[in-house]
Image (cartoon, rainbow, N blue to C red; front, side):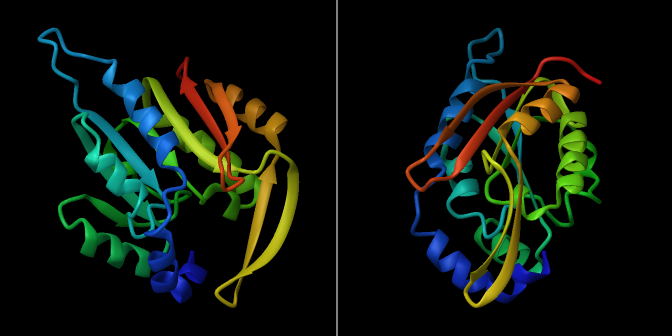
Length: 204
């Protein structure tokens, strides 16, 4: 998203000081550690951070988890990708829109998207959910934040205008279910961000 190019450094500085979202990410990673190999060691899980931004704190949290995780990132802001590469030079990351993305030619145990989905229009979010569902492994998880009410808002961040679109909880559940995903949890965090955790229960 080009608007994030204009605020990349300000956003990165402020977001790096926030711990919001980390509890949800850790809980998801704990779910992944229950999938173990016969020798008792945690199975290496592949996780995609969609809208990864500079990578701190979400990607950093994933990499610091006790489970063996192979992390991948994607962001539509070129400046955000530059910051991510500087922070995590060994993590594969692409500058691309989720609507036009090759997903590294692989499938994932989990896809996480914090603070990105609501920047897409309603139609684009439906396309994004369909694409994400198609690259989840059976039983894989999709964790994302968006609104719980159907609405459109416009606001300013660091003097740059942004638009926000929410399908609302009922429609998100319906779209997720139509793509083989069942919602396991929904809740607000202390920053009033609303989360959806869904699991792929059938492949389309």
